[in-house]
Length: 379
Image (cartoon, rainbow, N blue to C red; front, side):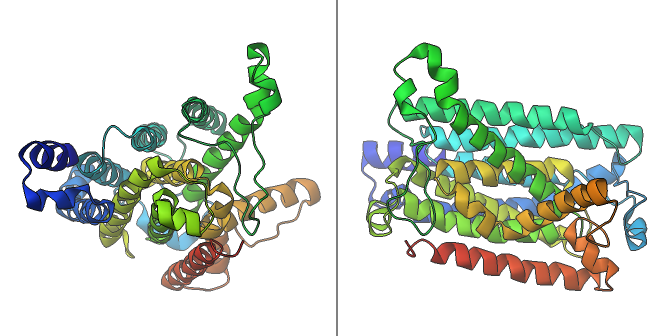
C-alpha cells in the first residue's frame, strides 16, 4: 500500500527523488519490522486489557507440571496481536501485486483462524479442550492442500519450481512432480500427488511443531524470532540475482518480496515477547502458534528451503519428535522415554527452572539457525 503510494505513484509519476528509496527491499523490510514491533508494543496493553475484560483466560491441563497451575487465568489468544502485527505491516510495505506475498498472508490468516476456533472453544467450554485432533488436522490439511495447488498453478506460470533443493548437494534436485505424466490431464492427480503430499506434510508438521513448543513463557515466540530472522536472510538471498547465483540457489526473483513478510514476523515476535516473557502477561494461544507455524512452513516451501526447516526450526522439530517418540513408546512398550513430553517439560521435571529451560532452548535455536545459514555455501 505505502509502496504503491510512495514509489509507484509519487516517484514514478512526479519523479520526486527522495522517494526512490522506497523501491529498495532492504529499506522496506527494515521499516516493516519496525512497524510490526511498535504496533505490537503500542496496542499490546489494550489487547491484554480486552482479553481480561472478556475473561479469556488460559486453562492449564491437569497432567502438566504443577508449577504451571498458578498460570491459570492468564489472558490467552494474544496471538491475535501477533497476526495483526505481521499482516498489516506486510500489506503496508510490500508490493501487493506479488502473489507470494498474498499466499503467505493467506496461510497466516487461515492457520490463525483454525487456532482461533480452537482457543474460542476452550474459553466457551472452560477447559483445555478445543477442537478435537481429527477436526484440527483436517482443517490444517485443507489449507495446506489449497496452498499446494496454488504453487502448482504458479509453477505453470514459470514463477515457481517443484524441484527440491537438498542441502550439501549442488546438482541433486529431484522433481516432486512426475513430469512424464503431466501431458495427460487424466493423470494429473498422480503426477502432482507427491508434491501435494510433501507440502501438506511440511505445513501441518510446522504448525503443530510450533504449537507443541508453546508451553513456557516466551519459549515459542523466542524460537520463532530466531527462525524468522534466519528465514529473512534465506528469503533475501533467494530473491537476489547475484547472491542466489553465487550460492547456487534456484533463481526466484519474485520471492524476494517475502523478505518484508519475514521482517514483519521478526518485529512482531520481538513486540509480543515484551509481554510474553516470564512471567507472561499474555499467552499467544493456538491462534498465535498455528499462525506462526503456518507462516514459517509456507515461506520455507516457497523459497525451496523445506529441507532446511528442521535446522533453523530445530527446537520445534525436537519438541514434536519428543511427543511422537513418547506416545509411540508408551503404546508399543508401555514405557515412557521422557519424564514428560513435550521436551521442555522433561527438563522441568529434571529440576531446571522455567527461565533456565527457556534461555537454553533459545540458545539451541540460535545454534540451529546459524548452522542452517552455513549450509548455503556447503554444497
